[in-house]
Image 1 (tube, protein in one colour):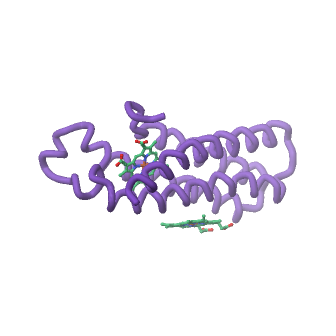
Image 2 (image 1 turned 90 degrees about the vertical axis):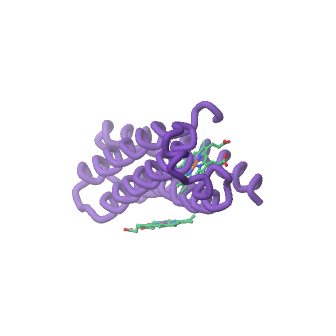
Length: 142
Ligand code: HEM
Ligand code: HEM
């Protein structure tokens, strides 16, 4: 089960990064071309949101079954940068990043003015993506 979830988490990471980049570029393109914010724009942003939520759930499961997750949390692990990344920094930063993406999507859905809706996705998704990229274990992935 651990190996399965690890592979799933690793594969979903590609999908999520691609989905976020696509959502951001599509939104930017529509905005720069001064197009009205349509249902299609919302759905493209939804692809990014769903990918992020799926990865969140898989990551949470992994956190409890991986030897690098919660079971590795200790004072000694805190002093080791690789251990700290897996049991603390990676999960925490990813959750904050996914929360930002969720806020960006929800605001875009709620707001009325097209420019504000575009900006909500552009700003929150980009911030979320930067936080996510900052705490990917690049030594072992891709
Ligand atoms: C730990 C698990 C999860 C948490 C804490 C979570 C949390 C949230 C929150 C806070 C929202 C925003 C609601 C709003 O203001 O509109 C949301 C929306 C959404 N979530 Fe999740 N979610 C989780 C898992 C999932 C999963 C597994 C999926 C599906 C694959 C999913 C799909 C969606 C969709 C489609 C929406 C947007 C609905 C809309 O159009 O407003 N979520 N979620
Ligand atoms: C934005 C969402 C996330 C991305 C893009 C992401 C990406 C990754 C990647 C690329 C790896 C390395 C996989 C490998 O070694 O092949 C990894 C490992 C890991 N992730 Fe995430 N992750 C995300 C969210 C989370 C969350 C929310 C949690 C927990 C709450 C989590 C827990 C873990 C754990 C425990 C590992 C180590 C697995 C192991 O090697 O045993 N991740 N993640």
